[in-house]
Image (cartoon, rainbow, N blue to C red; front, side):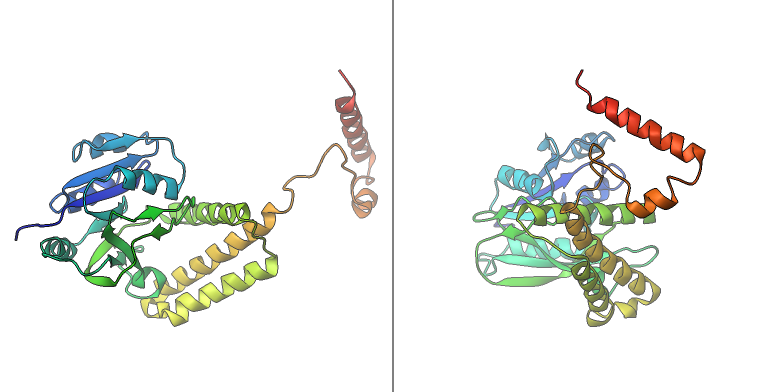
Length: 297
């Protein structure tokens, strides 16, 4: 099968040495070029990538969108397939992509690919992570990623899309601690993005978003069919949305008191700071130190 259209595979990475090799192995047979933008890895990621391509660019980390756009700008071929380091093409997907690129004319302007997410012992088949479809294959011309810190959005040339039958194996979680840390980081980054656009939130809104996301993943997306794992993914998805909007609320409030003007609340002063001589001495010492810190030097 002769390939008519050329393909650039782009991916961004940072400290992915433990899982980037299978990713690169899965695309080396279909890619005309592989472009890696590394955001400051210290674990050997760059050295592994250079076994597969000379097009490895070391940069500072500027967030998901900026890194993806940097990789896209370095692509030189007609079509682009974007991968994450924790994804790898299934053999069926490799064959589908090769078949598309061998067509005289490609009618579609983008192709969606389904995830097969490995979640602690089993691949999910339902729910948000089991049913996710992402635009991965698209023409380079007219494509652009926004500057979002997480979950950057792709702007592309308008036209029909099609979902491919092959899967991207998604090996997302190194362990449960890694999963929780990632979800918390993503929630805080997303909150910062929203705050930079002038958006605000209340805690009631945070609770509402979290509850709706939980119900959506468990019931509307049939996550319950994945059993206990499906329930856990629904809880985590709800927690993510709650954390995102709670973090947005928190950004509008100071995290620490202004210690220069600090005074204990009256009830705290009455019941906590006057319980005994040691508390009184501590309070006097604190006020004395504060007074000295305000004195000109």
